[in-house]
Image (cartoon, helix red, strand yellow):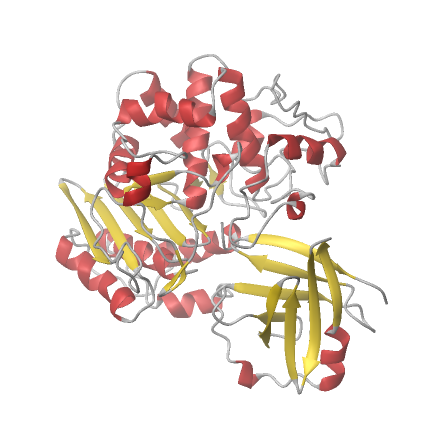
Length: 481
């Protein structure tokens, strides 16, 4: 669930609102989309892409690369029915379920989010302020990105599989909020995971059943699902960690609301059309409620609807998402009658975002001068792993400060060693690999999108390290002195 939301928001705003090169707007077409997207496949950046666009009365879908494993007999082309993991775009679906419950009178948006539930989840308070439903949807609850006990059950390849509502309840039982709910934004997978669970519990259904009944069926989203059928599993685009490197699909316990939804491009196109032109009835009212701006931009975050991020133009709503083997993005602008959807079965950190932005820029006529340069100016993406390790000279004394054993869990210990001037990291029951310096404190793997951040005091050895992978941060503390 990937890069820092605030930084990407600033980057998007720069691209849209402060570009220096103005081009004439043009209607999107299959040819324009192919021209923009093809290099990602031919340059072996991504394995496969499915792209959809709506622009006035024009609409189309384009598929490139492959949706299977190119190194096996599974190689196959994608189509409108190919299913993708969409990661954090799931938050938009979860927040729409919240809006639907509000429209039905089941929930008060500004009401306290504590409701009876099977896991006995109860939220902490701060300064006599309770967490409200709206706080969970707009990332202003004060809950952390991930709970303190998340690392007890996680794995690098399938991090959410064993983390369930009971563990969430245990984490909340000991959590002390850092500030009053509603004060500022902190992007939280944890908050929206719990939000999805509680909205479903309040309706007396599972998240899957509620998603199907209240969003998928009314909008005709035949493959919008968390629990895939055998047929859907056959049509799932094989996730890839990097180009040509398949990786397992992420699985979820009973907390899929922050990232567990899978859809086809056909589903996402229908969903996008419904955002542009909401249907009549309760669901249409819910779409309008989720679309409306509910929080203003401030020092901590962009303006937000329910689940939707809103650019500085006040018109463009967006969300991106990623898992260990996928990347996706959707941008929608009602004023321009424009929607762009990009689904990808490779966990590239920025290429999919930039493609979606470029397509919208082309359509609106506000073409960014140089997306890559602007991204670099805004700090780039920590997950890109493109820094040249040969440009940094890390001396032996500094490497010695990093050497040691760091405990994430009882069965997950990092063993950091300096071997002939190379920093080598072994993990319990996993092979030792070299990491490369992006800076004196940030070291990245090659071939695996993961970074180790060492927490150094002014003097002496590192006290801990933070593993950054798939948008997840996990802290391992030094063992011994």
